Length: 335
Image (tube, rainbow, N blue to C red; front, side, top):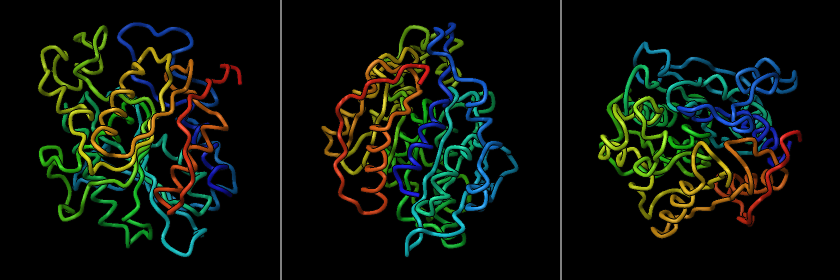
């Protein structure tokens, strides 16, 4: 199966990604997807061919704790489509840092792993009912270090790691991309302190990038941001700045592909515009694909599939394909 074909399945899974829940009811076209296409139900619907092509190694503790949220699932191809070890795709779920589950990553990553061109991992992390920032990024970095430390054992390429995240997961993958040289955000979890937590490319789907500028209901005491920071954004400006990818951008950040709907009423489109601008001004590679008229997710589109495919091939398989950044029109909701 070609990369473009499996990227199509990736986008189908992301179409029902977990948005950051609003403190006020979302409009009908902004509410999370439900029903048979929900990402949480996709693992039960994997085809037999995909099930037979992958090996699942679930529930691996990466932080040397008994906490069930500090675990990850590995998805390994039984047969590689390349002569070398496959690159690793790491998925980080959304849910406003307060809900969501790593198990949603199976339905999203399994088709790509079944192609033989990638290995996959889905990371769990502590949610805000249990821990405040920076626990979430400490967990994600510990998981990346664990994956590098166990790459030989499981047979994937530790030098080619992409991270993919939606909404709050998009925020966390952007933090992984921009905070590689920030010691305060590394944490001390796990036993692979000698391994790097840096990643090799980032695909950020509609994640917030500057919490300090999120206002309105985002700055209320019961907002997801307040639960993450331990107080409102206005009260916790220093922590909000530390938790914002735009404020840790440097020239050596990995390539970014950012995908965001221009009509997103949960995470403003300008959040991704600012992140792309900061990365580009610093000298890093950053591509922003606007989904014209798109809301918070539901971006399945053949042209977008081609662009994501090219990005992954370029940065994980040594390709040299152009990646267009012209806006893509959002498909009607019934497509």
